[in-house]
Length: 127
Image (cartoon, rainbow, N blue to C red; front, side, top):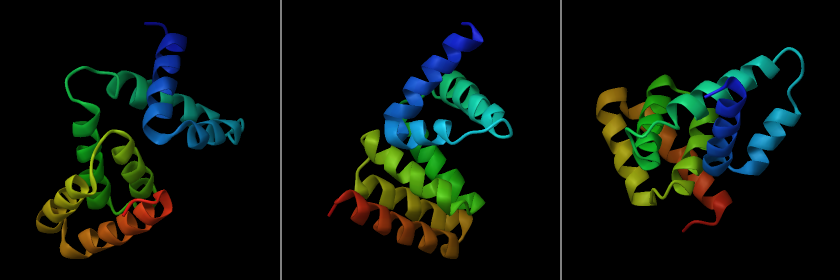
């Protein structure tokens, strides 16, 4: 697949998972400095990796949530909580992921994850 085709495939995946509004805003706000990063993320992360057949989007979302908790990346975690919901994960699925992270990543990291999830659920109107 050409770089342009992989970018387009990645853009489609990225929009479906994170929401077109968020993705389009990120790309529109890019300038000469950070556009190469937008291209890299869209082509390789969302095209090459998220486009692979080996794992479902739900499985990829669960992995991302766990890794983002471990890394303490709250901003990205909030974004990927939304993506996980878009990929069909339930609040209970997300709860179980965060309980698992409490054991392997630490209780403070999991507490922060639960707090972020509750805020995202509220913003999304999810009871």
